[in-house]
Length: 76
Image (cartoon, rainbow, N blue to C red):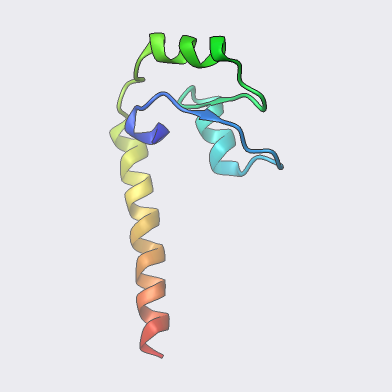
């Protein structure tokens, strides 16, 4: 949801994935292992972040690449 401009908190408990690091470093997502009610309220007050068409297009391209690989595999 972060790439769509929706305020997002990651609570992932393992090593962060590169995509998560990218989203966090570019202020699309916040990482809090144990968010408080105050943290969540603060995110809600901030509202959405700016929609990033470039980020959306990258996500769309990644989806298409994976989708095509799955379709190719299903043909075998």
